[in-house]
Length: 82
Image 1 (cartoon, rainbow, N blue to C red):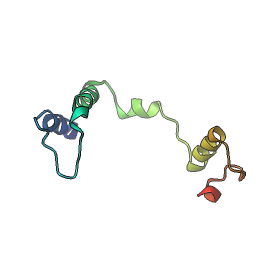
Image 2 (tube, one colour):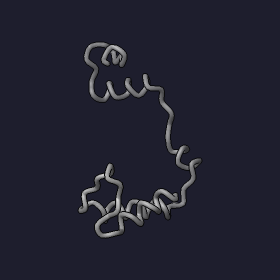
Image 3 (cartoon, rainbow, N blue to C red):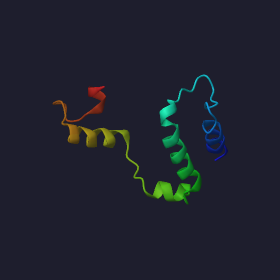
Image 4 (cartoon, rainbow, N blue to C red):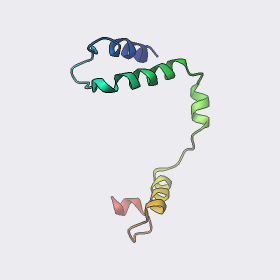
């Protein structure tokens, strides 16, 4: 959380004090600060976060997406589509 706190502090400056390689549109700073505030205050753990996710192999992910989007005649085989 130290990184989030550091980023919050730097984004709160006017103008934001960020590394040259990181561009942030000034108009988005208030929304970013609200999101960072949420993540620093939310009662969460890695265990809780992972409990809400289901592991899927890349093949299963590709097949699920191809069913939603429609396959291109190859049966949803992601290796052929790549």
